[in-house]
Image (cartoon, rainbow, N blue to C red):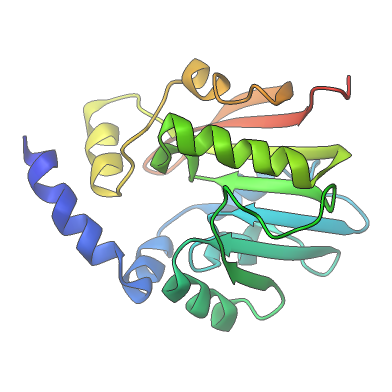
Length: 203
């Protein structure tokens, strides 16, 4: 009951890019960097992040000295702050279901804590577009929260995450891809499920 009361309040509060940026300072992005260290160790390449928000994750996780980074988010105010916070990257206000990039133009695509904000239809449409812009040998890197206790559920609900899934629940979204590996790792104050995906044609 309290979650339903607080959700509209959190929606308004975190709509402010500055407040959202302040909240992200408490996140343990180094754990995400460690989780995908091997997949991000390319000598060069192009990486797209879906739902980049204000660019805090990218500034920690993505080696922009080696990888050309592009971040998209639906919120133009978030993108404006991301450009200031992370000048080494490119940022665009864009709908993940309609990406304005050429076919097979990215080596890596990152979803960090985004799909739990997407309902089934939005998630599947976005992943289909990702499949289009991903190179045949490219990889999709996914890290999403899973609920392990009541506190987790509460914190995620007020963080506007309406579609937190189980590990298998996230797997149901990956119909365009095969799974190279998966894991569960600690990320305060909850755990994240990680997936490394490749286009199904690549085995």
